Image (tube, rainbow, N blue to C red; front, side, top):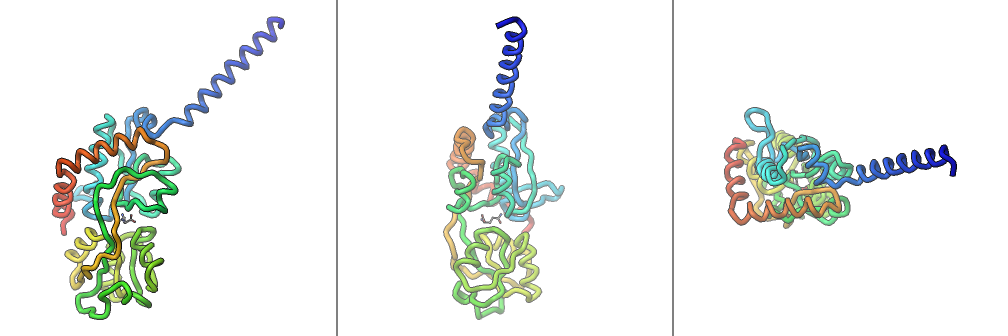
Length: 259
Ligand code: GLN
């Protein structure tokens, strides 16, 4: 090899090494990205009290925000909250637009195809809300042929669409569905238990049918294959569950969400 050829092959090696390095950069794990940016990005839909709602100062508050703060503290970074439509959260986690989906999100098999979940932190169920004077609807079978409001893309939506003969009407959030129920445009709303309780105490003339339709657990969604991040989140949740802190936050945010 003459000098020029040597120089060219050396330059090529440097370029290839640089390309490899950039390639590796793209493979960065979620945890590495969080640490490097100094920011944990939480995706949520702030219309699901007491888990997430807009507080007095219009900042997103709630049980999930408290948990996400504890996770950010554990990693040693700040927390950034992105408020978006619930039905976009899983794909946004998948595409790396956020690090954690904390949204009173039920860990179910369908979503497990797209994301990983932390350990569970709350037991939940779907319930039916109707007008107080409604004597017609007392069981899920009674929903057949009825106009039933759900929050788009939620497990309430899945239950009503797949398990009943009702006509589903999809809304961006439970409050919008509740308004249509009080207006008489819907016969019922199916939504998670805790938001259901808050809806009934907020809007006059509504009642809950006390039979749970489903058994569900909430967990935090992360992009697949991030075991190091999952380990940190599971550790934080375990401590919060053991100390009773999550229950305490639920009580606190039921009161603070103003219902
Ligand atoms: N738990 C329900 C679900 O995961 C609803 C969550 C929500 O509306 N924020 O689909």
